[in-house]
Image 1 (cartoon, one colour):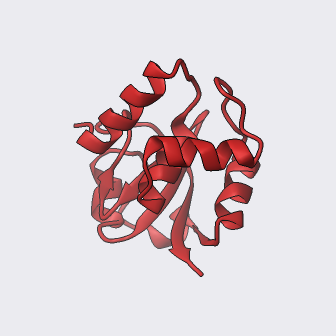
Image 2: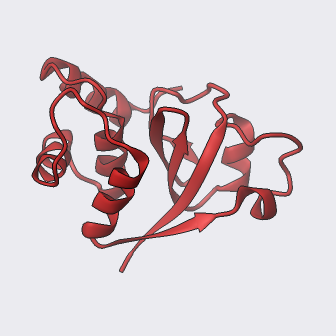
Length: 136
């Protein structure tokens, strides 16, 4: 199920004619900002309308904002996962209370308290990298 917050941010992005906005939605959710405020900040850091960002660019923008990203080694810290960790039920059980930045092939999303704030909610996409987000 897609959260109301994710739906609203996606709607605003599409109304503005934007594409490749998953990093903006993740940033907005993790910093508790509106889509417009998150988009303005990311634009000031070099994001162009209609263009996604590479993984290293997203991490750099998050760190510039004052966030601390601690990489979670999913092989070691997620012993409940029998095969590849996905965005399905396993991730909700393993990360119930953290703010997480989750990277998977060609996409990024945000988990807050075990809830996936993204259109991929309920899908079983394979997680490639997970970062616990805190503020310095």
